[in-house]
Image 1: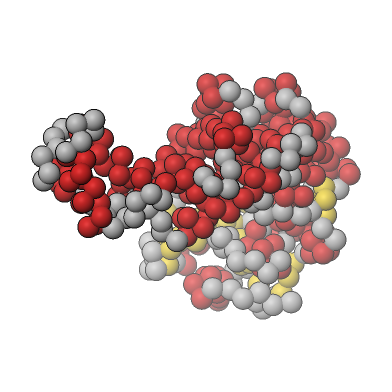
Image 2: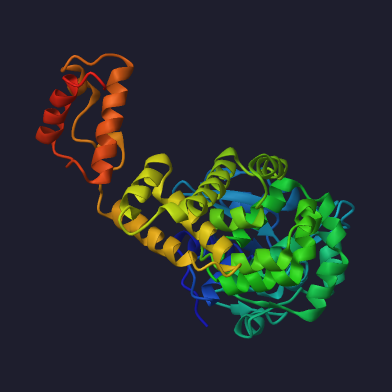
Length: 418
């Protein structure tokens, strides 16, 4: 097989080879290349010791922050490339990090310490693919399997449990029975993993393009989620997964369904789990306005859908409006409430309004506060007039035309009720 490698990566491999060292790309970049996906980064492993790597690339800026574990970062055209010496990991007392590492010149030993077979492949353009543990076959068969003994792998690093859930959902893989059994047996070890790491894996998992794969994996591993967020044990797992199956490739809507608690509790949980303030805001907003859509459905008909959508778009971004609609659909569909069809119409209307650049914000109104002030309105009156005119435009009773808006301001000046 042939993997197309970026120029700088090939230069690094060729340079190390020229100095008599083995060098391969390894891990995720090999996996993604085999799958026909664009790798996010290119990790390189080598038989050269860290100091030897630095001596080879003396003409390049070097970052030594990972040197303790054998990693040297070499800069090419302002891009960092991690080069790591083949190594054997020592014992893992904290179920996360090896106490020490031992360097080796045996690529096979280096690959044997890795988590899953699909991540334990190496490639060099001259030597081809090194696949000791059958990673390519597992990819072809859509199987996720630990390298070696799965109990040992999860005892070494419990985060691998969450990584298994993420890889399986992201790539549509079935977790091998032995690997799944070991995950469930060692799930309690997740209590020792930092929330930052846990939330990172949950976000990647919930970004999976395949809804079916995500729901299938969550169904098989729900008890692991209950370990990292004990509040989930109080939720209806089957209903949550059924609702999740209604949401396609929308991270925050999926998180809103997963953490579907009242606003204060939702925020408290997500803060504890170290989600960012922006992520918490988005999830909270989507749940809040999803509930709002449901509450307002009986007041909406074909005549005022456009106005309702514009009022929503005036409050929150289009992307959050759309995800709020998906959240609402998930709530209704799963209890057999046929009004979810109306929410689907609303979701399409939201897109059409956004895509056609219709006016639903003061910033797109054809007049400004200065125009209103020129007619003698002052202070808060200016905001009242602007919002009144915007509302008329959103309702469709007044065009967003500068001349027509100015004429209406003139009329309002003579109206003592305004």
